[in-house]
Amino acid sequence: MSLFNKRKKTTQKNTRVDKPKNEFIASVAEETKRSYEETAAEMKAIKEQLGIPYKVYCRKQLYKKTRPDIERYALAYHRRKMINEEKMQIVAEQQGITIADVRQAIKDLNGDDRVKIKINAENYEHYGMFLMDSQELYRLTERLAQVKTAAEELKPIINRVRNAELPYETIADDVKKMYSLVEKTMTPYLRSKLLEELSDLEPGLAQDPERAEAIPVDVEVARLFLDAKPTEYKTYHLYESDFKGKLDYIFDEERKAYSKAINSQKITDTVNNKYNFYNKFKPLFSRDMIVVNSMDDYETFKDFVTKHPEFVIKPLSTSFGEGVGLERVEPGQDIRAYLQSLLEERKTFLLEERIIADPRFAAFNEDSVNTVRIIVYYDGETAFPLRATFRAGRQGSFVDNAGSGGIVASIDVETGRFNSDGGDENGFRYTEHPESHSRFRDFQVPEWDKAIALVKDAIASMGEPCIIGWDLALNDRQEWVIVEGNCRPQYTQQGPLGYGVGPMVREVLRENPCKAFASDVL
Image (cartoon, rainbow, N blue to C red):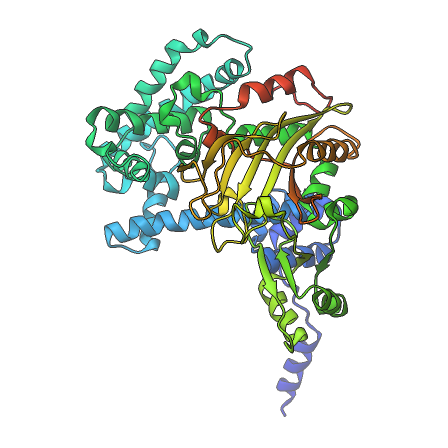
């Protein structure tokens, strides 16, 4: 080896090249006052387990949230990402181009000063912008900018009318202007799409010129000025209500605002983490439950499945019945290998003993438990049961959530009697269960007083103001047991009821305020 080569080798050995720091990790480390290495390890784990990029973790300040909240955000993030991908795929297929071409087209539009709004995959497909020439698109974005300005100005006033602070006449003229503005943004592509989405509920809608003209505009007015999603428009049959009637409904944004204003972080953390919630109310669950994080939990897992060979598996934090299923360990099955496969698929999960339903509930659908949700508001002194809903699954489905295809019916919170027919998320109504033929309206829930007493006592034990949806089941021993809690409960009974429950709920919240209430919510 030459002297030159020796010197080169020595130089390489003694020279250290630092790897450049990731700007997002560095920013979070600085904000949280932790080391770069510790922050990097945490963010890497979040990225690997939940698929959240460093950029999103940093900019959305997820480091300020609890693990259950981060998991909920991850679900929403991936839903939005999936929707964007689906929208771009629709455009790509219709235009015969690639998704990369669609992305570039959107990027080019956002760099054009003549485009008056920010274009994303969702609105690009929603309005059929990809079918327009430049001048049509520029005119549309000008009108959409006008609608956006009108919504920003009118929404606060609409909310005051909705909350009975102002009479409806205050906005009567503005409502007419809203419809006129939105009508000018109604493209042929959007009109056709909205009519198609409602066609299963209203088969002759497209052939009725007057309604085919008016209803798509109504869908968009509800979306833009009331934050009513098109799915909510369909579920609640909003085409049967005028604008004033629509104000009675509680849509997703409003119910989330209530929960955010009333529920502290402590309440949210307790309810969202199903195992924390179980431990707090263990006697009221009346069944076994464990959490599994890794192969280190093998002995606990083995003991549980030996005792309960048929069991329920669910994520630690989720809603709408997502990831919930019924599992069974067969005699002689390799339990260690089975656990390994579950961990590869789910990372962390809960196992719980299966609830055997009371025969009167099982009669609606024997494949699911069939539960009751009672939404209760606690002002720090008194518990107010607001609304109640019965939920039944469909044949062959273990879960009963409306979001997973189940059927809901409204329950009179005072009497425990069903005061509506059944209804599903697609807007279909049922006088009886389509498979079991059990009738919904006038069914009397057994032991209703005990269910109400349970949730009132349970929410009072939270020790501070909160609003919680309590999912209960009546088991085969005629005991009410907690299934789980939800700190952002939906008012799904509005579908089969055919009217909104907002006036009653808002009145209770308004007349019994708590210190946690933000002044701009009601």
